[in-house]
Image (cartoon, rainbow, N blue to C red; front, side, top):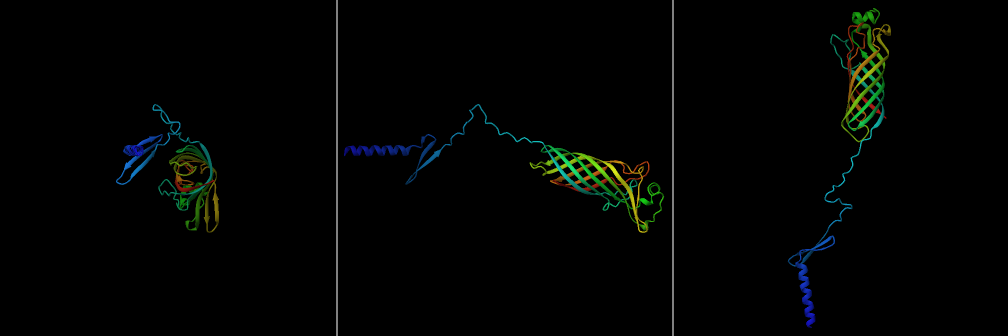
Length: 269
């Protein structure tokens, strides 16, 4: 009986000692005993295993490598339409802006050097159609282009200058909002375009005699140079093209056609 009493007393002391401890650690686990009014709550904490291999105190963790941009080349077919901005100054023949158009169709090739910068080139056909108002009344124009023909303005249905050109251009593209995709984001292009005039003529359509074309190689320039800018996103862009050379030979005709054209272009794969 005495041995039983001593054993019970020892167990009670050990239990009291365990409860009094704030925590016991076994390996990566820590046991904490929290006393309450009626019950005791045992909280168990487990430390995560260190990720192998862990650097020492004098070492730093390796940083993840940044993805390097790989230059790529893109080819697209594109087409566009633009309208001439009228200029009724003394240096230009009067043109109807809503009916004076430029149509482009061809290929664009872009070499994406970085996500924010690319170089490119264009090869396309360009058609210009300037609908004029009173060029046939100008004396020198009537002499050089119309072979001194006398046309009644009331008899003229339409008078236009048309030009069919082969155009080559180069541009630099800046991606204002770069994208990881090939042809998205917001971009702006700055470039130049040179046109070789394949065919150009002046056309008058009269009520009495119908259409008549007038050619004069000395009066029409065989080459045109322009500056071009584009702002767009994806496969669509607005463009402005400013011609800084003369369409008409300034030694033959005293005035020119308006130089500025605005329009929109679309790309297709």
